[in-house]
Image (cartoon, rainbow, N blue to C red; front, side, top):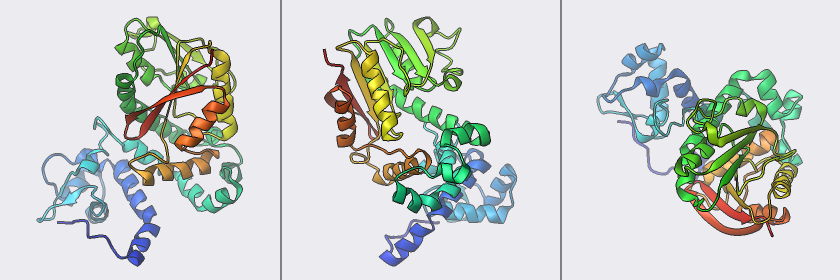
Length: 342
């Protein structure tokens, strides 16, 4: 049975780290091939799995052996393979599936961008214009539609998984309206409206995003009568009045975009309005390896950054918001309670 060996000596650990691309590529290959979906609850041979996913048996066995070293799948004493907690997360039908997140973080453009990290560190800006002659999102929508679709699915999965946590955490007693700014398809908004039957909501995001909202918010959906959908760019204008504004995971662009977004919220909101800013942090996380890696990826693709608690509070105070309590949404998200001064 393949097991994870004790912590190796520094020289071997560094060798393992510089082969990190092999691990990422192996996870991507398993996700692309649907290996986790093909593996059921009984121990299965590589030959049986190969037939199910239409690959050669020996190379698939080598892939499974490599992944088992990281706790993704496990090999039994008689040479069969079984699921682990991590491999189950690659199944598309898993309630907490990370299949599309795994694909997103290993999309073809990432293999072009990562070797340019030294350039991004020198300049402090995205490498995308140099690589592709255009910005990241323009590239996705004009030249990499498949990657854009993976991005949308990954963001949808992530948003759905955190929406319930946010709805359970936030006390909206006394509020009559809530606006989800840059809220994607509106999963957080839908969860809040379901919890608070008297609440009305507004979803604002780019036209291409809100064109396909959460079915609960769309025409004919159970929450549609209580929802206004506003196409727009929060970095340009926020034509929305509400008692509560939700801003989740969109303050990771360049500093100027973050400043404009917060300024637009303060300009749009009435005095005393509540602003809840929800973000991942790089200085208060149970998985610094993950959050710091995402921080570097943001530098590469949009010139952005994950925030520390101090940097986010500084941005909010600079915009004129009064910062109050900081709440833990889940191990990976914090909610900053703010108000617009009277």
